[in-house]
Image 1: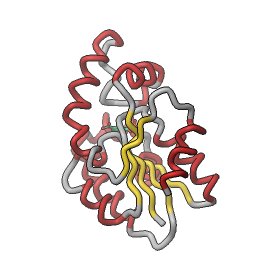
Image 2: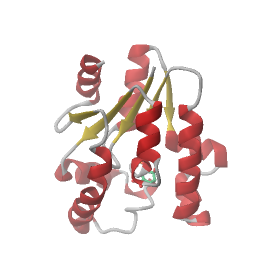
Image 3: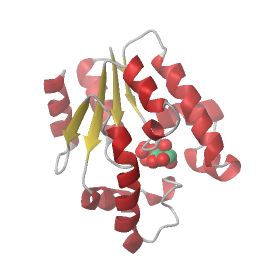
Length: 170
Ligand code: S3P
């Protein structure tokens, strides 16, 4: 069984994925952590030392590598993963379940403000500018997320609530 979690930055993919994997007793992989282990560098340093294109190529290559593994996994992707190249097709073709954790702009902004430093795409954006940035970015990205097999409204959820909603979908 392969289950992929998608969604914008800070939508809770990693927290929910880790918790869900524990409930289902399945291996959990966080694509960002997998990339960091492959490069022996943080996402922040990969972006600053090699640039975004390098990161996107690696993300593309390692997404397939993870989904080709012959074992059950829950995979949490990066916020941009489904939106580049044919990554969304790869996710749809190689997973049994793809789930978009859908959160509104105010919720996303509130969460992003807290973890801005480790996210290269938003680290230089003033807090006051974040709602506009996230709004535009989400407008571009939502069509990719919306191809997921399931779209889950997670506004106001704590991680346990989201996990229970996912379990009732499976
Ligand atoms: C990115 C999201 C990040 C990480 C990288 C790029 C994006 O992951 O992959 O900084 O393009 O939205 P999270 O969604 O876990 O923040």
